[in-house]
Length: 393
Image 1: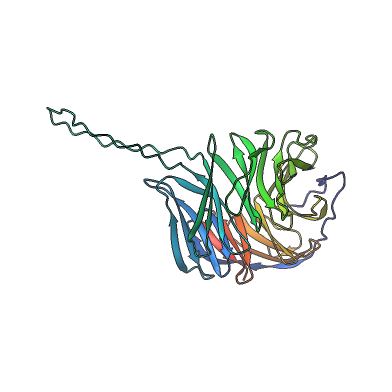
Image 2: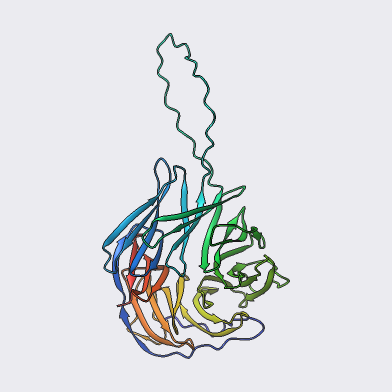
């Protein structure tokens, strides 16, 4: 059994957060709903919606609605006639689904000219010319109803394709984080799809993978950095970073999460500022679940040995943290995986473990979603690289 390293410390704002006391709980089994072909998943009311990108003459986006048993309810396709790809997804307070991704511009139709018949005395049949795909240089938002009907498409042209990491939406609008020309960027739009200015943060030495949009239009973005940001210098090999960006696009604050000679990064966050990420020091890898205040002050943190991949979700007073685990976890009774397996921990308002659920059928958590009708539902990768939906029993 791997021990949680006693030598790693979370250094934020010069203080250490309260570390949740261990509590012994018995591991229960996660329920596998269905095997799916999808890259993304959200939940809206009673429906699980999976999103996949299909390839063909044009790349299109396929949405499938499922019930809690995995039975298909409906299926819709986004196909504008050009290439489009969905890279991140979120649900707004009304249950509408927002997809963020990239698309090609629709070609401008040239005015017709009178055709001239070329001479062809040898009767040569010309080979058909394959239409070249346009670069997907349009940053694109799609708004869909809970039933998958397209309500709006909003685009913002860029000089190169954008790699979008995450999208966050609330009643006032939508915000996106990703990489553009190897640099992290943030951009926001109104609920009607009016984009603001694209804001660059750092260089290729910084990677931002999670975003939370706040009610005042400001955003918090999270990831990792190996460079000075906002006057805050690198402390470890690579530090986790928490960055607040004002509504006007100014960087309001930067906080670094570091450990001596360690590699840290934040991978996911939810609207309550519960974050998850990994701490790697030598051969020791841990997942950290930490709850922050709006001022980025940690209120509690909880760490477990892991393979580094994790995701997080808060519903009510409970935080759900899923990790890829291959060893026993202190305080979790009956959890002794022999290969990568998903372990989902429930944490109370103080970060103390109140429940544990696992499955050897799935190896790596990708995302989780919640609705009061369905509870917690997740998407995970198996050891065979297929994808499965899971839920709490």
